Length: 226
Length: 355
Image 1 (cartoon, each protein chain N blue to C red):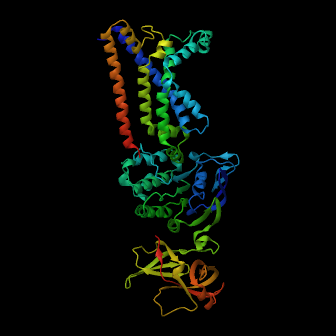
Image 2: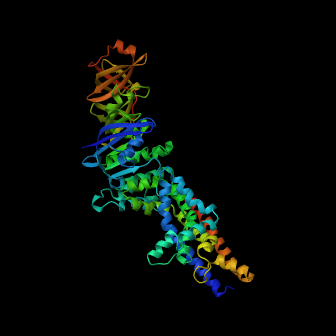
Image 3: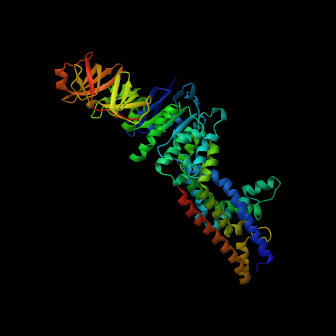
């Protein structure tokens, strides 16, 4: 069975994934909307930056974040100057890292969904007296709902599986920054295979269920398309 | 009251230069071949595309002028797109309500129920758009545009994506809008048939330029208009049902220039009809013929003539102020000595009812 430290690690993991997903949806929605509609010629540069975590070793991303968030980095230094403490090795630091790490998993499905909605329904809404924000929330968001679901689940699931970035900037502080993936690593290091099995099983099952839901729902939504 | 439209649009290889004044009533058709700028102009009128240096006044409303651009959602217009473009996530009823909800109560002149009834979509209200046929969708789209009580209805080839049968299904509804609601319509089309049935005023567009604009009857018969030439040249005559002849099973249709008699139509006395008379079906005589099977003979004055190819002449007649075209051979024109001002009799061999 899961030990108490394991349960705490699981709780931290879920909190991290939930919070990161929330932030990602808030940041990613306007970003994806803008990317789906802009005709800016250098848009591809921004798209490439957002996609970087897909190919970059997490340790590289983690290393730069560590430098930035640490006491001598720009962000960490600023925090210290403002009377706070550096963000490296804190839960907040983990959230920031996760937001970068899972960004493409949220922005890309949203961008695709907004592009699939197209301009026409929004033009129709405009001719039916809906102001820009009104048509965004009453037309674009509902029509892109499959994209929102996919983005949320992928962002959440991907954050669950985070390892390299966490190790670099969060360390391994039980009860604060120790997440499940790292707890599993610890168990294996300590040859506690039984506990590693339990934790791995939980993560495997959760990830599978979420992905199954995404694919099932996407199939259902496709039928709904006009 | 009129609609004043001035746009000068230059967009990579395509230019549109339009300075128009059209009436704020009835149906104005923007007619021309694909790519002539009809849709671009309509989108500019709706404000869906924003072009600088445009002027757009609809009656007393200024929608665009120097330094002023009213965004589309603040314009009292309705827009019907070529594809119905219903909101896929909303039922038919909620599609209709979407616009109505956003119109201030005191500006609602067309009741939702009225729009539903006019387009005959009451049985569809609880359905989702994905389950509707193309024709049903377009009817819902038209009702949705009407339900916002527009001061101007813009229609961009609303029938173009439908097959012939669906077109026939929808045309009567569009015609009835005309009579039931006092909303001016700008109707984009490249179909001469639709224009003949629906339009009161015609704007001819070619390669981004207005090549002619005027009353539909006038435009179809003006000898300098491209429509007066070609095999299918025709005149439109607005008439009213005067009565029926039960003995011979005929219907009498009166217009300013006289009376047409056609095979009986199940139309109530007094109803307005539009007749189409092909130029090639009109022949001319100098005296009133008595020994003829042709029923529709009208005294007319020749307004003008223009040669049509090597062998024919197109003649523009005025029948008590109503213009009508006749197509005769050049030989007949010479034998009868046809010239402007001459009094003749026009015989219409066949007449088609459009509505």
